[in-house]
Length: 466
Image 1 (cartoon, rainbow, N blue to C red):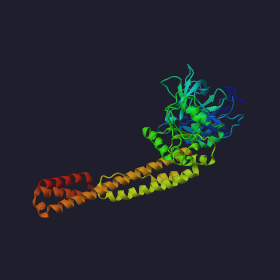
Image 2 (image 1 turned 120 degrees about the vertical axis):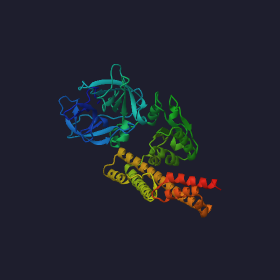
Image 3 (image 1 turned 135 degrees about the vertical axis):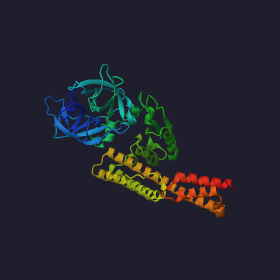
Image 4 (image 1 turned 90 degrees about the vertical axis):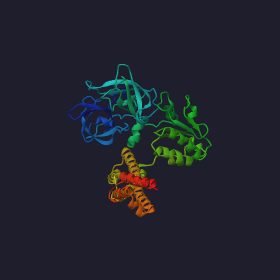
């Protein structure tokens, strides 16, 4: 039975212990509250959950158990709180992820001077925010979603389902705010996937991608006949018909799009099972896009367990296995850079440092085996790629410096003996130039820039005297 608006018993006000109101949240089960990470000032701090939908209900201390802090670009920003003791629930909130464009919603926050709450109605717009993770909210006139609303449930006025939580407001324009939709929440907190009541159909997903006001749009790759996207009243603006094309040709089309916009993009692969080579298309084109962080939805005309198996994201267990191998590779590259650094730093100065964060990375990877979470895993994967890149670049640069040093020694020796030792010693200017170049090269560690200049001057004077 649907709960009437304003009578939700799972609405939570979050307060500092003995202090001010921090924001809002939603009670997902008797022990778990979902909110935004930025609502909690300190991950280790205990806060208090107050149940505003239950007059007289006892406040409950709570601590963070899952933490997805906002990244530099503001992706994430989610937290799960564990209550000190369970709270009985007559009804749990229903989480849904339908098409969101122009849905009418309401929310309740706790801004300054309004600790008992302020109700606001709004209309949802298109996706926006970092990486398209948010959805725009346009509040009714004379109402503002502002500080104190963060973490508040955003509820569908049609059926009372929770569609997301408020994440941010825009102080420069009254009534403008954003929410984190359920789809994004589940992406960062996959353990919540089982709480979602339904999954959107492919048609709904594509309609949301290309609804009016959709930020940026997506690329629709049609790989077979009668695609779902053909039923849309508003055609896709960026569509590639590659039906009958080889996997290599499809890959070329996709790569051209990535070259134009290398940031994360959205792709719809429609009628994949009717492609010329469905399994290799899934394995060689679609799966790598997903693993690279692009948002991808895939349409099949008929369900295929084999294709779904290829297209399904790798399990965290499998990703941890791959991570172990990648960490070992990155650490081996770091050790090679360190060995080259030891060799070169005795001969030349200055030399670039080698990345020394391999042991710390190994500890983080080891810690993931005990408590793996998707955000922590993704961050560790990113750090592993970064260590490998930095180590490889450092090793390459150190080897270049080493080769240059050896080349300068050989060059000086060749020109000196080629000019005739007696002539070099007899010509005072030439002798001075040679002595300076020799001393700079063989006084360790060598100032490479000064030695390079001295050798160039010696060679130039030698050539001019011939």
